[in-house]
Image 1 (cartoon, helix red, strand yellow):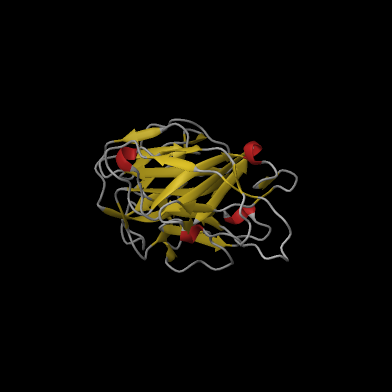
Image 2: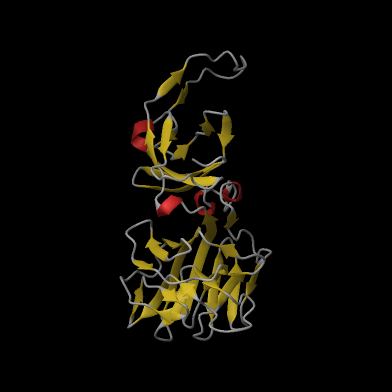
Length: 306
């Protein structure tokens, strides 16, 4: 589950087993592979990372160990506060850079949010240049920022909503993940991840079947209290003509009202369930992203794709 959901930060976080790249910045030290781009940037790790920058240059914390190549999707769980000291200001979200060690400029080539004309904007930066802003956001509010690169263009999203920006710009074949910051702002990030890009940018759909009771409990030892085991089939359908990458990370959303006191206890709230493939039968790594308004959002890793 996401690191902030457990009783102790990252206690049950298994994101690294679901996503090809994942970090939750647990503990108090900057994890291996991450570095500050310039001396003006500070990254303070304390169960999540806080990023500040004393100048308006878009520099931040970069993952310098390896690049990421299109097609891909990168995301982080992001919030910001403070008053921007410049306009425009590359202050946060998630971005990409060609220079993780700050050896050249612009430090930030592509990004998802910024401060523009006196307000915080869901806008994008392409090749170091601001594009047209397309919506405001609120400080001290947590957002999932998404940057999708198909290799022929990009899509920017917030909380999986409508595409707030889409470009057909040509992008470098490989870039480094960047968590940018800027003067006057404090950026907070709980986790960052990469996931597979679906065929034609269209994710497979999923449908939950009916709840079934497992009748044969002969495998349970006698000392275990009598319990009910249930399962629900899930059909995942790829509507595109090409297969997904393998492995592939699939979002599944569950309305907990349909499973009250079966896999979900509303009074706690607590959930207890596992995902299995049908052929071959094997447990699948899964990661709970959030629980909001009765909906559990879960990511499941499908080893063979679809």
